[in-house]
Length: 282
Image (cartoon, rainbow, N blue to C red; front, top):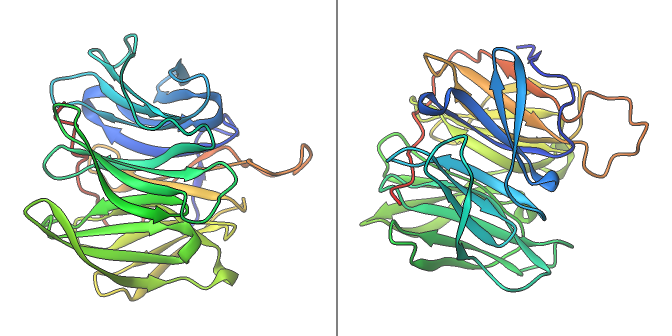
């Protein structure tokens, strides 16, 4: 499978792609710029959200979007409208939010990490529709991808520093029984953002590994999608049939003359289809 470069290098640190028909298709972040990007027929447009960092955004069930900045939660009633700060997600300037998603109940899961990747400085938060914040996980180093199985009975989670994808059982909305789903050798890169297909397979971006790996529901490696850039940050299924895997890449930390297509959005058809994104209930 050879991915197509859809945009060229339009971002410095592209992350957190999500497809939602209600906002016209695909959106993702240029994280350090604090911008939300949208892919349209005429190219890529930008919406500025946070002056420090933008971790991710998701649709809201009533329309508009929710966005997670460095330490601030934002809401917008219209997808292209002005965002407003509605909650604080921490007060330590050394720590920022990172990747996340909405769980099957419409609650937002948002991870965090230290800017300098200090071990155990991050965590995983849950924000409900009333904007109440609960800590689900503590002592996380680099909270990254989180996604749920098609039947919502399992949750997959990446703390990049562990070089693992872990899996939880989901019972009454709680995450229980954390265990290793798959370990990824350092020689293959570090697991970053991930997504789950309708057949239960798990697809993970490999930072420093120039690839996305696919694993079946039992954790067996079933596919490798190679990319022409080293830092592959996240992936999601999109398109009208959710059969296109969109992949974000990053130029973060690369020299000014790295000579790659880092920061581009790529797309490939891996032969499986994704699960529709769950909107935030708040």
